[in-house]
Length: 329
Image 1 (tube, rainbow, N blue to C red):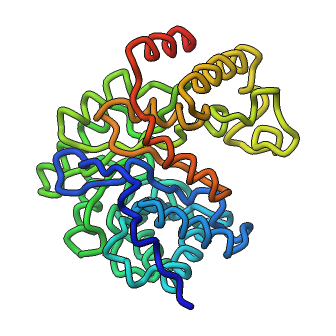
Image 2 (tube, rainbow, N blue to C red):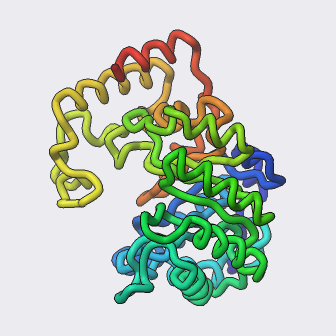
């Protein structure tokens, strides 16, 4: 029997307007950075995507280099899309990005028009899509003129290869210039994707206010600080954890005694709220309307269920906010 998504899938999710656009995103979005490449069983990836959609997660976030190896997450997603989700394509928001090293030579990285347009063409082939809903420039390029990069984003929208465009990892000053250039071109910047969590709050230094002022949405990646804001590290570094695996994204030096003490205090507060630490950490990033969505990764369907379950206990009292700030000092 062909898989059918849950008929009540939209009842469990909160949808937020993305800036001043007409687009709404789910409060929880699923990132395909890990666990969707060739090193993961295709059936595992399939079950994660099915569970997410069953719970009202309509936004699946990719990039050209996601895997491993690079490109394999898009290819595997494309296969699952054809086999499971084709009838519901118009209910999905599918995003991808280009900006990190993807192929050899001088045209496989950064932000030139040549690289961005070529990369999106490759992404469309791997996924089997005619267009993506959102195409991002993944990181600022220190050498390519910003006007060239933004004109490339404008071009792919006019070609019909992307419905919206966004930027990721841009500091506030570069983001403001990029947003203004896109507005002048007539293709507004829909969204910015920065790293943001209880442990990494640089966006509060002006970026979130800028995006709100400009009518641009935001989606926070790494809201659990690479797993630090979960119950995985309450007793130290487990042998099977990301920090112990030699990952370049989280190493044991980051799990300091001071950091562990804060994690345990935050966990105690989460328990008082009747939540897991991971749920409270996600709720905190979504605590006001400046953040449109949080981008989670998952290796188990239970992690997706936990994330969506957070929405029933999303708000904080003033006292709880003060307690969190005191812990993070």
